[in-house]
Length: 80
Image (cartoon, rainbow, N blue to C red):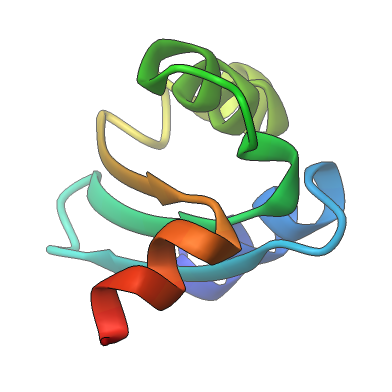
């Protein structure tokens, strides 16, 4: 599955998110997701939100997904 298609699905499910997805071409993906709706949520809850946008693709076309999730404030703090 094309990483751009994965990005699109995540963006559709998490409006306002900034998403970057890469793949090794063998079903293993890495996604960096910056989203305001992550505010106040723990890592597991953030991951569940992202997985929810991908539905049945996880475990089928997407064999592994490494997630890095941030709120916009967390992402901004990393840049300084």
